[in-house]
Length: 249
Image (cartoon, helix red, strand yellow):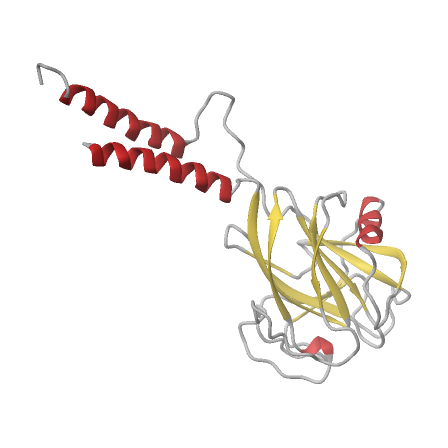
């Protein structure tokens, strides 16, 4: 009996820790992305609040292998920064969107990527699931990425539109980017050719829908199912103890 009682107490303690460590308002997401020529990856709310920087690709035009976990699922080698993708794992909050801030340093331009969402579905680069805004800020070329504040301000003031240019994986001059779904597309807002209206600026691409929505919390006074189970175990243990100690048992 003492074992059952202890197990019930232990279950309640575990549930308390579990609910603290894994809050319902956050979840994990993974991504594999590359851009011709540069990008920064972010998550945040639709209005730019809570914007969080995940990472970026190389400065300069040369390729530097992504050796820090997580690494792309397929081996890759290349001369240019866009030829091999980077992989990322990061936490998103409820109602967050994913942002790809991209810019080109010359000739053709595009970005391509896949994102495994918390529900295990894939969000791919295409013209149907993404929208864009051309930033007012200057193209950083091979230099530092714009500041977090600058990008958040651009997002807050943006007017979003649907990208107009795309091409399948395998399209020249990029070929097939390893580690990214064959169904993903090379995307840009106006053209994949050498001259874009955003050549002097950077472009912000945003997932049209939030990538994670937390479950609606129960009404006040209604216990979570896991907590209810734990309390049920505790109640059974207490009832059994009381009956065992009764003179009529």
